[in-house]
Length: 339
Image (cartoon, rainbow, N blue to C red; front, side, top):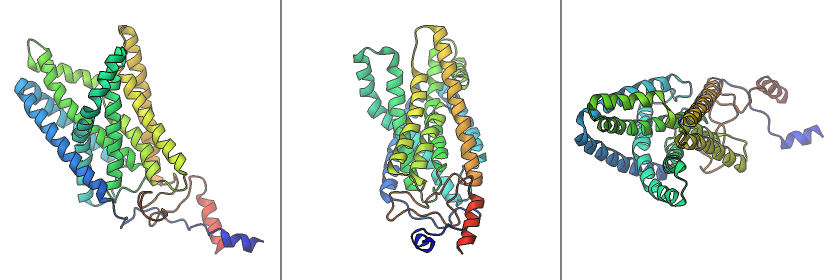
């Protein structure tokens, strides 16, 4: 009876030290074409807005640009310190991957927001739900556009093979979006101060550094976490993949929606903002803790060397064993017994 049973049950793989695949499967050119076209269109729109904004307040926009570059450099430095960052990949890949993320967030995301946000804003105004105007007009199109960018980039680069790569890609796309926004806020702040463009720009930036810093990075990272596990995790049903990706997207969307929601009572508005901020940064802490741990140990389940949309059944990456956090010892013992 045992021999018959063994005929239908494949032996468990030997445990080997996890290592990133040296020759991952190819990526989809369709997604790359979409990525290139959207990035070019988005960058053109972003460049045009930036150039025209300089005419309104050269000093304010220059301050915004300087602070934005400093902000981006610090953020990228911090992201590179994370084990989730795809370090064991060619340098050319890391460069173009980072460029693609920043261009999608700062360019393509802006295109999507303008295309979808305007009609949604008009519908919200006609409904009379004025308090949610910035929530639907901002969170709805922006989060969809950024999450779409995570999926496109994951399918475009063959070296992205781990679930947590979705989260770190989301961080980079969110950084690109914040970079695009922050440059404009420097100019708008300068125009709001009737006495000094410099003080108005600095006040605007100071407010953004105190309230909601990293909002777009966090919400997109949460959505990317779910998308990454949906794309690269093995032994999950289609329903669980969709549920995980949709659930993470809705969490990020809810955080952004609540942050943008306006309340007439000032005290209630402050309480709401503090509450949302606590939830947002707590979610970031949990995501980074779990993601870094998974990237260090690679013990959160099997992954594929390519996306689930590729031809054929997904297989574990080279040198990567399908195991869980608790069964490494059992796997090695069972493998020795079957041999």
